[in-house]
Image (cartoon, rainbow, N blue to C red; front, side, top):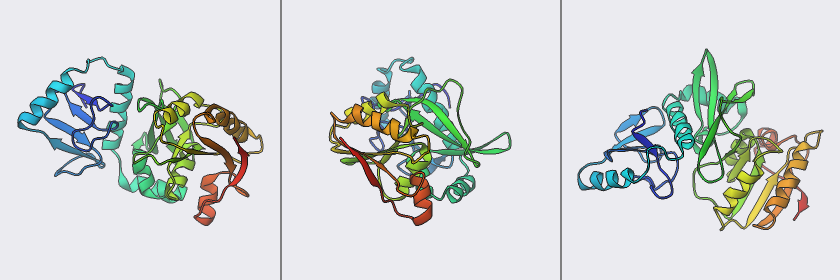
Length: 271
């Protein structure tokens, strides 16, 4: 994708679906790439190309022209890279990951996760964000569960599409978020237990309607999950009602979901 496409943002939402992330607008105002709203033209497996004509294209081009070419260059770069991966996504590989991980395929779509081949290996690609809808890196995952960040990435949070409810779940790692989404819960995920405190706080501040936050801690022997969740609870306690929970009898939320296809937590700390 050329530099003539720029990602949507709060002051330049997608003219097709109204989203402020993931969609891309051509600087000429005549084309929009949108993953949410279908059109006759596909852009890769998961995206659609929409043609804009006439006065609407002129108005859109004028709006886009007000956005500097170098505007959050790092954000633009990561957004473009993720969109390229999405365009190359193979649904057969994505279904394989969904089966192996025991989660719904729709969960990958919600987190805008791509699935491509790289050097003969199937990999998931998911963009990380800074809490304010800006992409700051991409994490990959292989079929064995091995994870790494693409060079130059910064640690961030994974956020799904959709309406953000009043009750927010915060978990550790994308796999748990996929499981929670499969269970019908809205969850954001930190890369690991003791990271992304500020990014999570930014996300909550950007959505002041959130009333309750459930922080899901892993039941790991080192207690790192509980320690990280507790610290996050102190960070968020002034912004909403916060509780820290654990998946009783299981190591994490995905393990619980795989075992019984329902989510039941034990409350550990109430702030």
